Every structure is written in structure tokens, then in C-alpha cells.
Length: 256
Image (cartoon, rainbow, N blue to C red):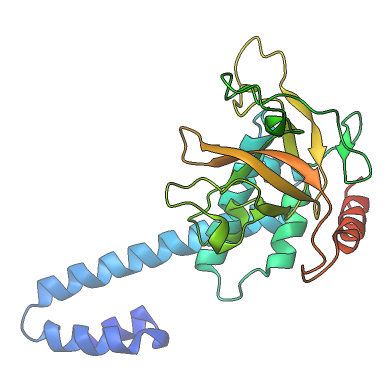
């Protein structure tokens, strides 16, 4: 009986089989219950992995992006399925592949695209109305992402460890770098999904560009936002922004 149960659980679960065989002679009901629970969990895992494969590799771009109107919400939907796949699959997605997938649905038509060569006009930091210091002027707010997450797709920027504050904000004057194109907004409130939305987006900051942090804050979802100035990337970075911009151009040509 125990041998038959072991075969049903599969050859790759030998430690569990040995445990179950030892338990079966003493408590057969407990062993059967444990085996059924294990099989059910394995079935659920396989079904979830299949769904993630369908979304990441086989579905159209609108399914991968999600149905939300908000640019940030669509990015969160995409990040969710990429990380579900990575957590369940034996072969993990590389950071380069994740960047390619995150760049999907970045529609540049009728959307202003900002780079170090094409920067928008300066605006005041409306999140800190008491300040009139000219140093508070910047190009807008960007969603940096979750700084404490180990999931690559949950952070839109590369932020050095010593640039982070313990409360989840970023130290002023630190340089951060966009991993992919990111929405640039006049404030940190994402209201696109609400009725009567009038718009706060200024355009997109292109992937590979660098920004100097002027101010930062956490939103209600514990995501870090930064009020930034688009600046030249430091020469000490591993690869120049021009390389990443060419890569982003190649990525977009696959979809448009």
C-alpha cells in the first residue's frame, strides 16, 4: 500500500515518500491525508505556472498588460505574472528578459518621451507647498517602486543601497537609473483609474536615463515616489544610457 502511494507521488519526491512510508505503518489515515494535501498543492502549483506561462509567453500584449487605464497599474499587473512565473518555474527569467517584458505596452505615440537631450520644463514640487526654494524645482515625479523587494520587476529604477533611507524614501541628491521607460508626472497621485480624471502625466522618462532625487515619499501602497531632475548618467555606471536606449528602441520595434 505504501509502495503504491509512493509511485503516485512521483520519483522526484523520495524524501517525502520515505517519511510517508514510515508514517503509514503507524498512522495510515494521517499519511493518506498528508499525501492528498501534497498532491492538491502540486496540482494548484502546476495550474498557476501554466497560467503564468500563458500570460507571459503566449498571450497578446493587452492581456500581459492588464485592462487598467493607469500606466502604473498595468505595470503592476505585468510584474505580478512575471514574478509568479519566476517563483514557480525551474528555469528563471533573466533580468534582461524581464526588462524586455516590462517595456511592452509603453506606447510612445502621442506621448512625450524625455531624455537627457529632451527634458521638460521645470516645475515646482507641489507635494511640499511650503517650500519656495529654487532647488526644489524639478522635472516631475516618478514611481520608483518597492525598494525593499527582491523581485526585479517591482522596482522601476536601480537605486544603490547607500542611497536608501530606513523609512523607504531616497536620500536627496542621489542618482537613480531607470530600468525601463517610466511615467513622469506632475505629482505623485495616480488618479487615472478614477472617474473624471484630468491627467497629471507629463510623458515618459526613457529607460536607461538617470535622475537626481530632489524629494521622495511613500504612497498608500508602500511604493516609493521621487521628485526628480533628469541628469547625465555618471561615467562610473557599468553601461552607458545610450546602450540601454538603443536596446529599448530594439524592444519597441518588436511590438509596434
